[in-house]
Image: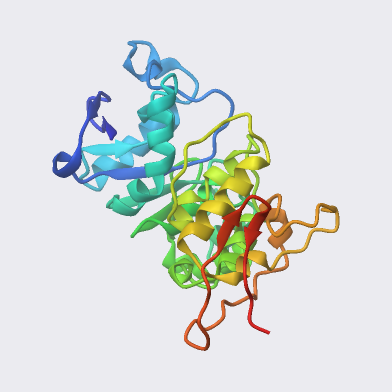
Length: 290
């Protein structure tokens, strides 16, 4: 992985056991962000998007981290191979970070801090509406929220009662035991700029890998479900509802179909033997208990 030095603002590649302790940034993309190529130019510090990177590096230095990962400038998006690797590795990178800074750029610092200010400000942030930030909320071992001016808004666990109201997620570790339908319901509340990213942003949450194919549209979400079925026998993947889908298929077209599936739990697999799912020339073959 490629990391940004928080003092010199230079990029360096690391692999395997050579990867140092690092912080990681979660943020919403807004217009043109500084790229891998931009960050290496002498004029990058005057470009739009620099203040976000500078703020993240400053906070990381305060926390005694020499390195930070920021998706906008640590991935060379001109390389399709590198982009594919990054998308498939992103969940693990957030999971392995020492701390994640969730930067809520649309939260304005208060003139006078009050007890109620952080919760009220956090509730309205668009950060909670974006597809990629779902895994960025759940994967890190430690996450701290910051306002647009880098005011400390508290740790994830300190704000979880509010976050649960916003996201529908019971607790920060529930993704490990939640059913497929429940996880999909969390994603149904979120949007991405590219339709394919609604699927790609969920790969880590479900523990699957697949190559991103931008241009495939809704097929990406079907591919995601097929990959999930290869490793899971959780029937809740079929517990969706879409009045506009008249295809009669078993698989949903998008996470939106799971919007009402937040309470669907998986069946106890010890109660009966589950035959494996299989793909045939006529489609997906499954057997359910009656």
